[in-house]
Image (cartoon, rainbow, N blue to C red; front, side, top):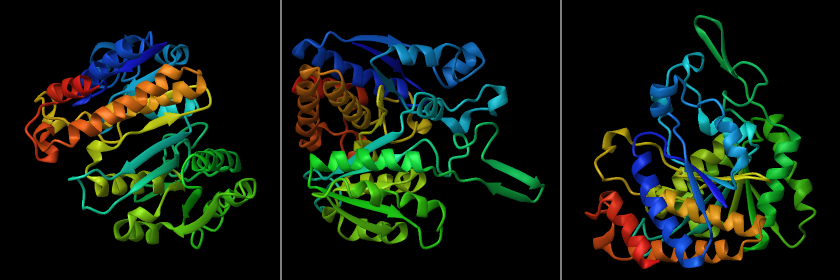
Length: 349
C-alpha cells in the first residue's frame, strides 16, 4: 500500500519524520508492505512552485491508499489568487473526506486527573468555514467597506451521513451518541442538523442525547467521563475537540483523521507551531496516533488485518513511552526531543 506523505509547515517536517520512523518500524514488524511518496505542500511548495498546493497533487492523493499530512501554517499564506491554498480544506471537499474523527482519552499522570475516553465526530466539508461552503467564491464577503458577512451552509445529505458514521462508531463503543447543536438560536441550519434523530431511529440500541454547544463546553470541563461519541457540525466540533484534548493532557496528544468512504488522511489535530520549528522540541504524538488511526481505517476498508494489529501496537507503544515522565517531550514536562521520542516509540513497538 502506498502512503502519500506531505510534511507541511513549521514543525510539520520534524513530527512527520518521527511518525515515519514509527510507521517504518511497524511496516517491518507486521510485514505491511508500505511504500511512501513524499511531496511538498505549504510554504516550501510556495517557494518552489509558486503555490502551496502544486498542480497534480490532488491526483497523486487519489492514487494513494492513504495520506499523512503535516500541520499547515495557513496564517503565513498569501491570498488564494497569489497561491495561498488551504490544502487541508481542498482535500476535505475535493476528496470528500467528510468525517473528522478526533479521540480524546486520559492517561495516568497527564491532564487534570478526570477520567475520559470519548471520540468527537466532526462534519468537516461545510458549516461556517468560508473556504469550503460555496460552489464559487468565498463564504465571507463585504457588501460595504464597514460591513463583513459570513455565509453558513448546512445540508441534509452531510448531516445524515456524518450522523450515520457516529452511530456506527457507537456500536463498537458504549452505544451512546451526544449530538451538539444550537438549534434554539439557529433554528433553520442547526434545525436541519436534527436530521440526526432520523438516523437514530435506525439504531434502536444506541442512546441519543442532545446538548446545546455552550452547555456542552461546560459539561466537558465538569465531567468529561460521561461522554462517549460526540457528534457535531464543523465549527462546534472543531472547538470542542481542542477543549477535550487539552482536558486529556495536551493538544499534542490528540490523534485525528479525515475519513471518507474511499480515502483517509492522517492529520495532527494541532497547528504548525512556527515558534519552535526546527528546534527538535515538538511533540509528535498527535501525528503518530493519527497514523495509527489511518492504519486502523485501512484495516477495515482494505481488509488488511496486519494494519489493524499494527495500529493497536503503535497506540500501546505510545502509551508505554508516555507513562515514563523522563521520556516525555517538553510540552509534557520532559526533556526528550522530537526525533528521540519517535525512536523511543519505535523501540517500544
